[in-house]
Length: 488
Image 1 (cartoon, rainbow, N blue to C red):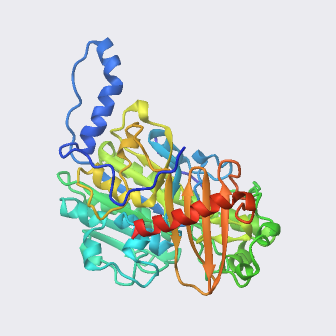
Image 2 (image 1 turned 90 degrees about the vertical axis):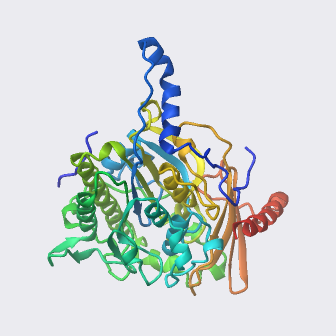
Image 3 (image 1 turned 45 degrees about the horizontal axis):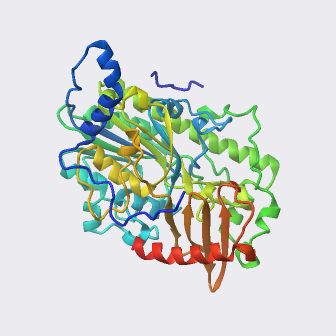
């Protein structure tokens, strides 16, 4: 199989409205150019140069979204098994955010938060049936970019509601519900969905006009399980040989003793445990499923490499920003669970890589440690295009972080998961740099979790039941109420 490789302290609450608002005439290009000029000034002086960077046109934007990809399912994140050469290269040429999180770990709600830059408490999309209102749709990042003159495209799993905005995009290849991997192209030929997504992206790029910027959103299904299929992770047959001769390490918290730490009512008929039995309940099954998951990741990485190659061939690479992330994480047996929903890092922490070809070389290949969120992505894309961030968005633009700045940055966020399901308890919580507090509840039952994130990164020791941590627990209970109200 050929893999295509691209050639090249103290908690502070997040504000309700964006705290980063650029000066009126400070576009992303000018902002990054200023950062570049500041960094390059000594070298230019030594060389006797005084020329300033030329003003560039508005950037093209490609937003790449994976599905159920945990933060460490990338080679550049330290995973020694999974092969992601194209995303690793993108991180080496751009910026990787080590502490990226979602505010709700389920497809429909997280995607709505990404589109709108809002907490679920504000946009109120908690299930798979609820559509965007017309007003909400107008305020999604693609529609705001379209209103500003961008050509827009959408490919792959849409994930929000049943009535898709087919006619609102200039190029539409969106899919309803949970699409299947084994599909057909427009000629009726069998093709893997990830392969089809890549082909459609190339087709979109061929339609782009030289005098009009574009925003293309590509929403892969990979590496989400195909729940109704006994194979679960239905990868492209060309990747069958991948990982055959390696053993995927089993997580340290995957033992039954970790699941038994939960109260009886949580363990009874829990959907995360039901699916765990289908995927990870024996050593052989674990290896088979984990390798299938990684094969889907590598197939998606190959597609991203092909998209980057297409940008290069069309002469678009030098002015196209790429943003890659996931809609939520994924338990690979940690705490005796699979899928997502709950508040542990495996569920809510996601990869985030941003490549901007205008970024100065001295700022490339860096890793940022700030706590950033899925609600920050829409403001970032708008900021890059020089579009004012609406007051309705609750996230913050990441452009200052990309530019190497050290602005005051929130070290706390509100987590919420209120999806109604008979086998999935609800969760609310507060995550800070030092602690994580979670309140899990269902049908009148409840329990709390409190983790010291610095001393206990694998969240093995729940401090909530211990009297010595009572004051900390009470402080987080109060803080949860404050953040819940602020998110509305």
